[in-house]
Image (cartoon, rainbow over all chains, first blue to last red; front, side, top):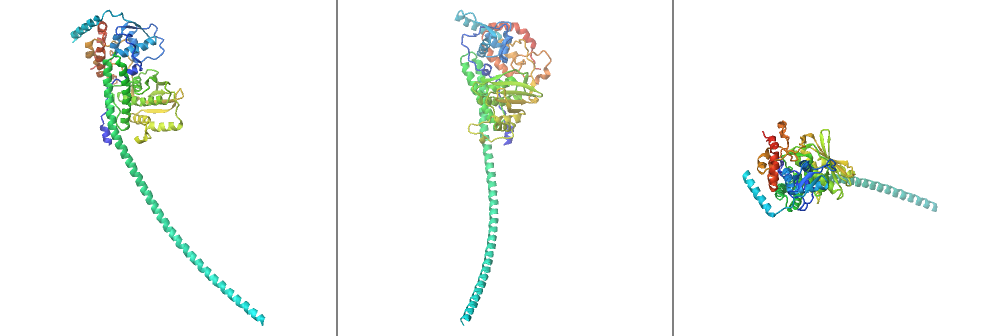
Length: 128
Length: 391
């Protein structure tokens, strides 16, 4: 019996150590029109007065947007977090008064999106 | 004349009386002898009976002992076979849950901005709890805990533990640490902390906070969990201490219908992986203070993460090519490697293979490629100077 114990292979855990729902502390997604991909985020000027300890992911966002404007999609790309998770974190940070969010200019035409997608495809092809 | 007759009469009566007395005495003596004989016979009989009784009693004791041994052997055999059956199924669930966790993570990356994400997060939470139970049962049945092959910051290990309990929102981690657990300790410590957090949540009110702090005491690193529950009485404390030290290992059948395997499991993990757990303290809220004591063999000091922005590669192509070779802190932030840190590489948490999975999966979903392009252009140089680290 004890021999069998020794030969037991361990189950390997390959998922991330911290699941997303803990990073967001179980908060719901903000409404769609909030924190769109192109909305710009910047750190509030006097962020020194932070009441709570920030999670490392929140801190990473704060570091990214310190002293500059950054698009929501950009933050997602750089933190390697899904966009939805970034939006939840941003909602949390804005609530704590740590960041300012500027809404993007209203979209002119839905064709713009198609055009942009085409451009993106082109860029991908160049890259590949 | 009549006087003579009277005298004769008297003499005759005396003679009769004497004769009667003699007869009586003789009879009395005979009776006494017979009584004595009877007594002796009875005594002898009693002695034999007692001898019989003793031997019968001895035999009974022997049978009883045999009976007990047989019962114990049967129980042990039953325990072993139950464990074997249970271990097999628990391990199956354990690996399935682990697999599912990875799959769910991929889906979350893929549908990162879809409303379904909210439900996905809930499913992941449920799965994390299932994973904990499966791991717990597997370990109690003699299987090893799951293994992670990267170190993790103590902060993240506690967050992992937090993810495994139902009321995870109540857990507040009050501070960051500069310490990382070695890869082999990550999973067992997370599992033990999860059981402690679950206990803290179960034995306190629904909205009461559970606070986690860290302390370094001499060569030990302590994870301190304070709850605002009702605390334990002396008897419960003694029992908990015996279970946590591994001195008393209950059988599976002794765990009850709604099995309480938290403490036995923690005791087993602590003994196997070389840490200690104490729950005899009183928290600042009057509840239980649980302390996980990690000896220095299980942890290292984290290298300080760069405070300034260390841009990650964002262009679609570069993600796959250069990201894997770049070192990261345990929080996944890119790390500068300008200093000669090569000898420490072993201790360095480098999230390579998996991070790349995340990188490509997640950033691909994100649009805003034009903006990204400009910024990646600007930061290209600084990223390039950090260069690949593998040597």
